[in-house]
Length: 376
Image (cartoon, rainbow, N blue to C red):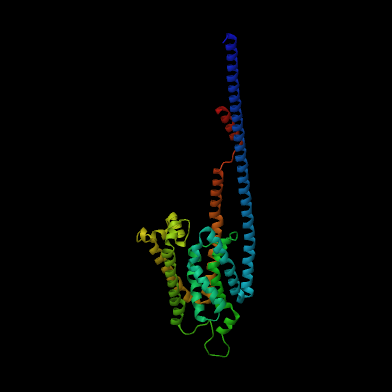
């Protein structure tokens, strides 16, 4: 082979290697450009998603504010209408209560089922309210059943409104329903006991010494204590046994598997522990392992004491009127405390959480692009 041919081969070999290098360089540049383009698109997508998230959050906040305004509007009007009806036609209040129960309790079950709070509907207040509904619809003239319902309504339910600090906040449907579940039954049986025209006429019959008909009782205090205290206490004990069997035996494993499922005991113990209040200290007298037992005993003592108070309330119109004012005043006061003390803290926490979520800024986009270029 001549030197000329060798030179030609060398030139061709160099040319081939040069072309290969050039192609590899071109490909690497294309890859780098593709990476850069994808990085830009990723950053742009982040920006778009961040902006959309902020937009959705703002819209949700606006919708929540609008719903709260609507709820407040209808809540105030409804409360005013109820007060008017209470003065104008007290005999119609039981029908208002029945309408409220069949409308809002099923809706509450649906909402609570979604929030994993449905075990709240096993509480005594719903057990008692179901008995009230059955009594008013099917046994409205049964004197003994009326007295049992009176004891429930003006005993544990009424005092729970005060002790557990139920708040009348018109912008919250949940809080309005919670207040009415405890407040309405007492008002219903107050109107039947003292303001219903038929009942009032039966309490003061003209021209007869005969015993007045329902719900006026003249047999003596032993009869009153039997149907206002002992029989309601037995009915309460039946509920307590059923509640314990359902929550602590039948559904125990379900509750242990999912700590998000709430019961009244879980919520109250959580709040009491956080505040380290008197209820938490009392429930721990027998040790942490017996807190549930202490909770049941404390609730039983509360029920016995409040049911005993229903006897003098049943006999005294003035005392009953004062008690109605006390209940309404307590719920309104608690509502004011919630609006002026609790809600501002909730707003501060919400703003703090929002500030912790930082949106993507153009400066960070430029920095990312520069770091990508330098790495190439």
